[in-house]
Amino acid sequence: METQAATTPRGKRTRDAIVDAAAALMYVDGVAGTSVDKVLAASGAGKSQMYHYFKNKEQLVEAVIDRYLEQILGNQPAIFTLASWADLETWTEQLLDIHRRAGAPIACPLGNLAGEVGDNPKLAPLVDRAYRTWESHLERGLTTLQDKGELDPGADPARLAQAAMTSVQGGLLLAHIRHDLTALEDALGIALAYLRGFKR
Amino acid sequence: METQAATTPRGKRTRDAIVDAAAALMYVDGVAGTSVDKVLAASGAGKSQMYHYFKNKEQLVEAVIDRYLEQILGNQPAIFTLASWADLETWTEQLLDIHRRAGAPIACPLGNLAGEVGDNPKLAPLVDRAYRTWESHLERGLTTLQDKGELDPGADPARLAQAAMTSVQGGLLLAHIRHDLTALEDALGIALAYLRGFKR
DNA sequence: TAGCAGTTGTACTGATCGGTACAGTGAGCC
DNA sequence: GGCTCACTGTACCGATCAGTACAACTGCTA
Image 1 (cartoon, each protein chain N blue to C red):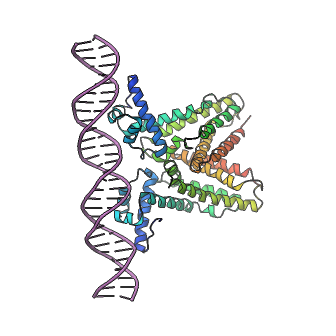
Image 2: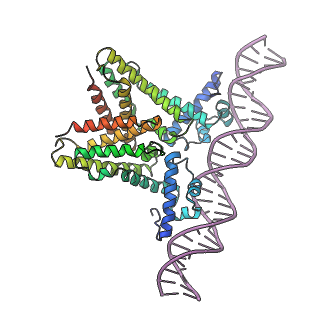
Image 3: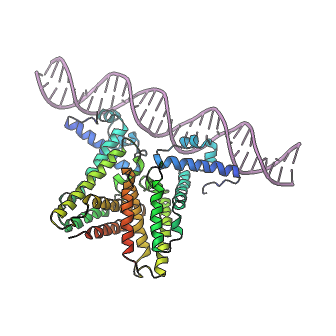
């Protein structure tokens, strides 16, 4: 029912190439601005492959959303092992480093999608789920701090994690259109200071 | 060179109808997801009108961006007369009230566009300019507070205004995909508390 | 060696895309 | 009344869109 899985190594390579090309193109041109034909031209695959692995374009977008989440989390590995205030700072540094690398535009792939598919009944829940997964790692880290007695027991880790995410997303959005990381740097600094207000 | 202006009242009505329809459709479906044909069907205008007033679709989008800024600022009139801390609070309340009104999706039209046209060389600067205009009203208000001695003279109104904007945008993005205003409420609360840290 | 499932290439379809051509119609102004 | 010019309706164009049809190939297993 879901996306068709590839069973052989060759098939997996083809499928991955399609998703990779789609992810890269949609990052820049959006979903509606990226045609299936362009994706196939960029990936070197043919149309029969595309429709062998995906029922339609929408299912390809679903795979792209998953890919984005993998890429995002893979670029901020500190988020998986948050256990101290220093770890949180390391995490924000990794977040900034992602976008300090020249070449790629300053933007969150999920954030770019959020505006476009925000009301698509099929895709919006997937974007939502991706954000919640991302946020859950933050929440887990804050809970760890709480368990260690380094965070106010009265604080709500879920709410604090959401607050941090809003700073990340808002900072990235402004940094994106201004081609200037300052907005993200400031947003992360303020978010971190806010969290430290609950330090024990 | 720019968008063709309408000279007669009848022409102005037609032009406005086209921009209004385009603004409403692009708010939901994005730029690439909104065809000229759909805009004309929704506005009741014909293709010759569209291309009489706009050189191409891109120029229509330019007009839509301007329209979005008008709508946004028109819905938060307190931003024009910020002169006290209470005014700032009123402003955030107006911001929330916009999205408490049922019917419309929770989202910032400019934010929705930002992801999609973020790297379009023609449109991105216009989105940037719209955001700067919006932000400049905040900055002016903070400067007023500073002049009145109610804000730390060492504070940077421009930087504080940008910080507030990141909170607004981040909060709206999360609130959008979660269909829940809580993210925006929290973000605005935190932003306001941050600003109050510079109170004199 | 034959069979078979997974995979691939190519050609095609009908719908829709942005944009153009052109013949008009409406109302103000002399 | 007749001229002018902003405005409008309709038909059309080539390109591109998402999706389909179908034959052929590849590599594994028996």
